[in-house]
Image (tube, rainbow, N blue to C red; front, side, top):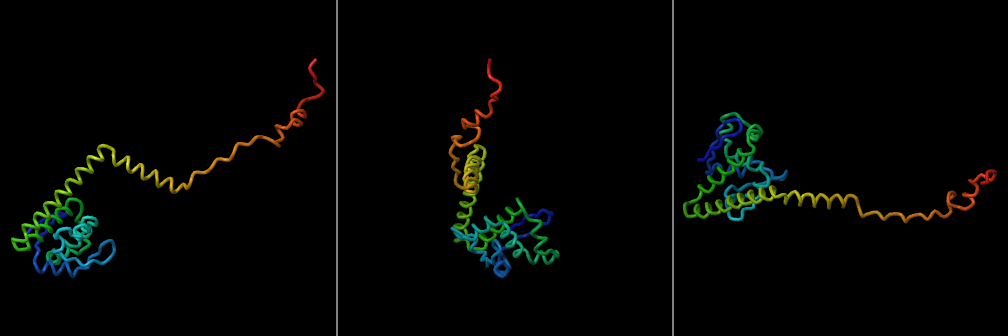
Length: 192
């Protein structure tokens, strides 16, 4: 059994057993608004699509944790909305770690060792990705890439560049015709 504390200070025990696996499978869980049947055991499989979904959409962690903790929630008279309001940030990460570790511990020892290595590799990968992203942010690389993408999108919105109108020669305008110049002179005043 692994435990985590929510933002309200309540402690929750994560235990993965047959009952928890069935509760998660029967739970009403959504992934970006679409219903999703969650096989908790698939969460720790190598190249798990479910793990990718959980990482890209954190509310899945909350829904899975709530299904696992449902008997505890019922005993404390806490609904899924209240449960979810007390999960966020580091709490979500801790809850996911508990779920992953407990799911691995559910398997027999021979399979558990392999799954533990898979988990360690995925955690190391996530840590490297954070470090690389931080380094790129510090170096300004991501800012430059974002600026370039924004500039391209702005150009798309503005459309193709407009051609400038050719310069006018002034022919046919009143101010440049010879008659116009002569008519503006005062004939009565001539230089003496």
